[in-house]
View 1 (cartoon, rainbow, N blue to C red):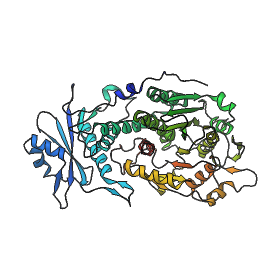
View 2: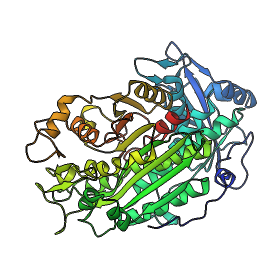
View 3: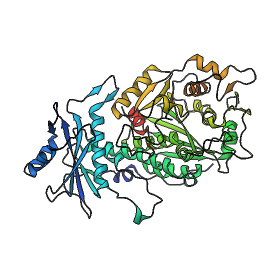
View 4: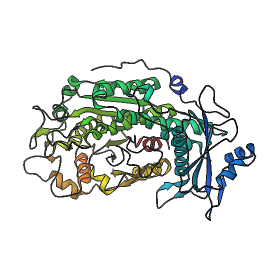
Length: 512
């Protein structure tokens, strides 16, 4: 067992990098840009400026409004860049925001006002960054938190391994002219937490091994007052997590279990326990994935990365709740030691599992960790993982698949998705699917199951066999949302970059 490598620092230290807001011009060298909103009118060519845009227009004697008249800023996220509008800003971005009357849409399960703000702020900031602007000021768009989320997500780029002279423009964002600075900071915290998850996903697999991920998690969380402990192979063996070890033995990289504890409430408060799959590279094992596109699965640690990002956010927000997380870190590789199709392993709870598909290794690993959950006496158990890519074909990228034994908890997730824009949709925990993974004569459970189709539901049914029976259980399958963003919807996330979802959904779920 390896104890914490980094001495925890104060929460104030963790917050200092987030207090980036201003009511005036930025300091230092570089070009300044401004993002302003424009509402869509009822008729073609009609528009309304936001209050902040009106103030800016007055300061430039109506030139901004005259320029906007000749543009078509629809749908939301359409951006037009203008220059020569005073000396304060090198460029000004007019971003379309849709209709001013946008509000919560129950049929869409989406707060369209907030989402339009994220889209406008993110798209405007991205366009200015592309034009070489270093310091981007963003108006609050009636909701500073949503504006900060969109802008911070929009300007993020992963360039860690590119020569500095060849790197694309980096930019910082600040609030312009707004009063809701607390909301702006909340938005920055949430957006930056998701960006940290994206960073962990984007890193090459040889530079984000299970051990390196553990150290990265400690660097992110310990300064915020969160306790992080990495459990090594000896601890895993001592705690009888043999199914986990069996699935990880094909790789030379040592597996580990990361235990994270955030104590925001009293010690007598039961925690919510999160279990995350963190496969730092998933080749499929002996059921090898196709070579084309295999590198995408360096991001198959999405569940673990999202949990780390979420814990960082709730620690910075001082959410009054207790959270424990167990993250299974490993690689799934083919080798002479790798598990073979047809092999049988025994989970920690004593159930035997037949390995029908080595590419469905995550549920076997997570099953062992779920058997550890009762020792924490949780009030709720949540498992987050990428399970089956078939969800991308059935549900697409806008929605996270949710399986829940609790109606109340599901509707709380729906509420969080409505506010955060990271929506969820419920799939069934039916006995029909459980029978397909348990109706075997020689073993207790199969990791694939009988019949054709319903693969995400079979994975959920499998996990239900190992979840604590007396505690509400939620399984969040992020296969369609947690990997590379396809470029459809959420234009504040760059196309083909890792999404970092559902960090903001989880943060909102715990915050509300």
